[in-house]
Amino acid sequence: MEKRAKHLYEKMIDYKRFATIMLAAGVFFYLGTIIPSTTKSNFDLNIMSFASLFFLAVSIILFFRSKKYRKDLLELDDTQEYSMKK
Image (spheres, rainbow, N blue to C red):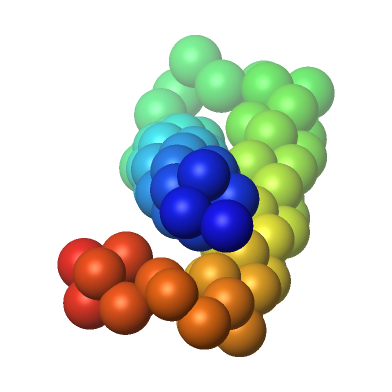
């Protein structure tokens, strides 16, 4: 059971890190759409808007997945040390 708790904890941390990276990438693309520039075409703006929405949606999904693993980790009996780390 200790091995399963460690596995769940590592997955939870990994998904949270991936979600944070995706969130940062989504914000980067969003800033690219709102910063004015004369060289941007409508196609470029559409691509950046779609990329921003995609990265933010994936980020939200990954945060929910991390939350699911945290919940599973808390349901195990002997995970006191992992649940305290966050």
